[in-house]
Length: 138
Picture 1 (cartoon, one colour):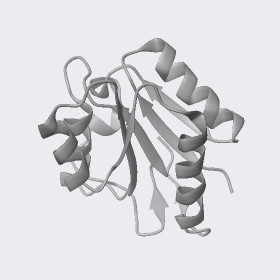
Picture 2 (cartoon, rainbow, N blue to C red; picture 1 turned 90 degrees about the horizontal axis):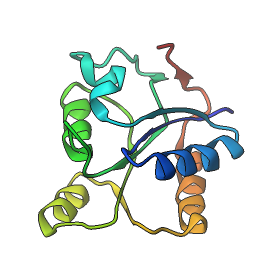
Picture 3 (spheres, one colour; picture 1 turned 30 degrees about the horizontal axis):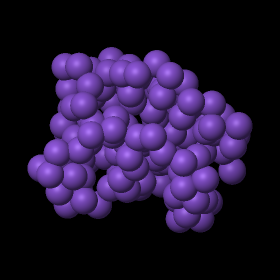
Picture 4 (cartoon, helix red, strand yellow; picture 1 turned 180 degrees about the vertical axis):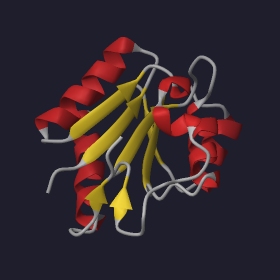
């Protein structure tokens, strides 16, 4: 099964590193330097059916220009997005950001992060993804 991940980070090096790790695992990767440039942010309502997914997981920086990663995920969820595997990555968390990410049920990684910890999270996500799900075209 091929997995799809979205990577959002305004830091080119981090975005490229995450994308490379995911592609080496065989993932289809869509990466964006800002949530505002992601097509999912511009739609009003999730168009995925019960067996479809626009992505299997989302890895996002917290602080980015224009829209924060937290605001991005909040909007997707308000629109009915079904992506349940979300991780936030930040080098400097405020108490409010950290609490909000935890409240949203998201995984938290601190920059710099160890790739082996990311790999373990990806392994657990992959085991939880239904084999019959279909990735939407977009």
